[in-house]
Length: 182
Image 1: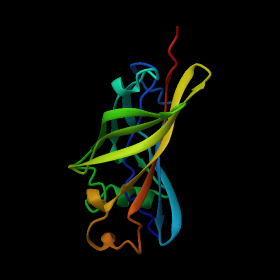
Image 2: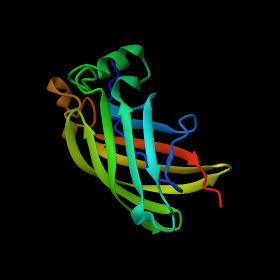
Image 3: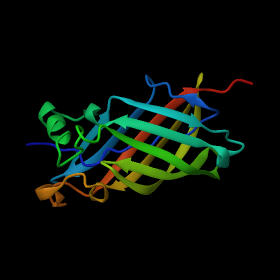
Image 4: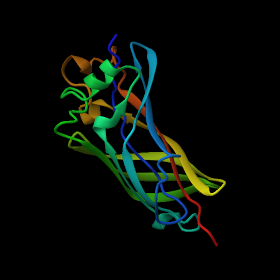
């Protein structure tokens, strides 16, 4: 069975101040369903520049770029398929990018980020809740963003059949940054 990725997009969120992500502690993954069976995947290569002051989240920013060819799926065949024109078309669109336009507090250590996601040359407004936690020397944001793969033409042709691959994809993000020092 060829397991295919729908739309493992991106999103990373902001933290305690301007800092590049600690990529050894960060992950951008996704969950989707193919023929009703859950499939998890991720991206091995991405960069994230984030700025967040919990006291002034509205001044926060996030800019995340994913290398679409770095997709990771349960099998090599699925990875090769996901890079093809019908899916991510990694040869023509080697990157996907999220740029935040606003970050708002949603309660203690909870936030909502909104921004533009560009994937396969298509830009759409997206939004996701996230949490901010301190873990030792790191500040960590985690959240889940639901997206429509078909809105980005991920899975064209016969793959537009949502009975085979569900339209909704859950982008799961964990982005870790050095904690601010006082």
